[in-house]
Image (cartoon, rainbow, N blue to C red; front, side, top):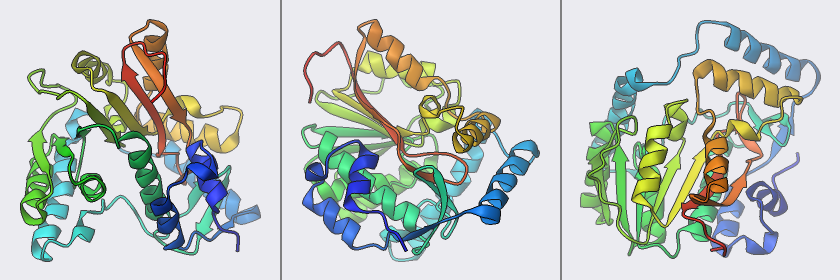
Length: 314
């Protein structure tokens, strides 16, 4: 059975093997990243199932009217956290379905470990935190959900001031309860990215991050993007399904584009960042398509940027 190697991780992140820190390497070694590539009838069945789902009326679309769904979802995480003696494993989002078919390097795969996708994401997250957030003093995660990313960041950098912002009250309450129980430097806030609160203070030398949160804004990301530019954080890290990185002539990419369009996921964001860069309003430091995703689309691509025209790197 083939497995994802250290070189595969480096290639996925758009970096060199030598730039993978020791703790990332340790995390990789802790998990089984073996997989099998689907071919023939098995591959055809996956493609057919995706096409049928796209052509059906079963898929929901994103938007402001979905707030109640997210409130319910994060309330379930909050309840589990409280009932199971503040077990941090209860913070794992329930949209990680174990054992599902994934996309990897242009193929559909099955995996030896049912939590392959989440474990891969944890390696990516650690690498991003090590590479881009080490020098900032504060971090604001918009759409922080159950707070699992904030916990990972608090463990890595206990001295940083962390802010979890979400439109769900359960998410805010989770962030504050985590801070109370584990004494992490985390504060939860209510924040609606469809209607940004201009009074929110973004402190100097701060980073903003999102993980699959802009995805839910669809075409309506402009107001929040304007908000970020006005607040001018030192760095913005967006881990999102970046539609512009697909290639329409590739079958799996074409299916992913159709799937994202059907669900009204984030569209045009990367093009807007490129336009803003040509206007001298921001600087894009890195954009990278991730080689891993669920069967339907690539959810973990990322772009790193900062407001203002900057000639030097990090």
